[in-house]
Image (tube, rainbow, N blue to C red; front, side, top):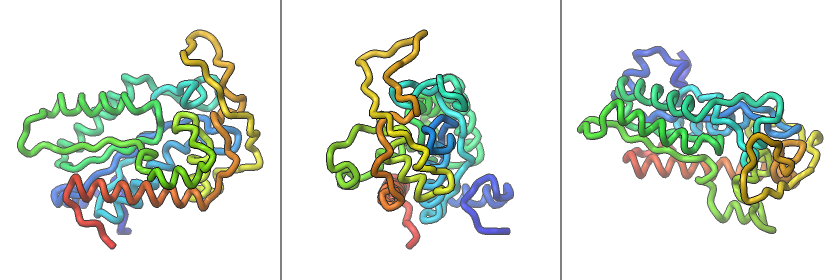
Length: 261
């Protein structure tokens, strides 16, 4: 059988052995959401899955199947629900799925778990799901697990952000389908990116409030909240390197693991 970090591609005795040995388990959480005219809708799955797999290989870890559906898209961070193709879950459903997956991992003996988010709107539903998992499993057990939660973009070094955005960083909320995600996809899955299809109709200029029951006219027609101009595979590699290095260092620090060379 091939050597792999993918949890679901292994037979159960191998998973049981690795968990008993203390292997960290990475859980990518994403979404199926519009990412402009120039990119596929699985960006929020591809990015966290890839960085988890690279980090897991350096740490002797396992990567659980990614959650491909996320908390419902919001206009200011994902363009909203008006774009065909986006598949939404309610916050309660996302939290329930996270709870159930984590409690299963707890039951199987996973002690070191890292939830890596790739979809902005998932942040608080994931937090609630982790809390619910500990409510169900128990918080004061001597043999209890440790769960780390993070958003992959938070591991990018400030120096790299300054290098990519010398004229000013628009902020991660407006980076939906823009330079960061486009560049990383150009590195990881270039066949899913067509820059010629980008229409450069941003950046969005939002009001300081949200509307419900009415359209959000500030959302560009492409669904890209900032701009794709300046995206490149080279920048994508900088971002991936930062994210993976940060993830490996975090696990080494929190779990006492020794990364492989």
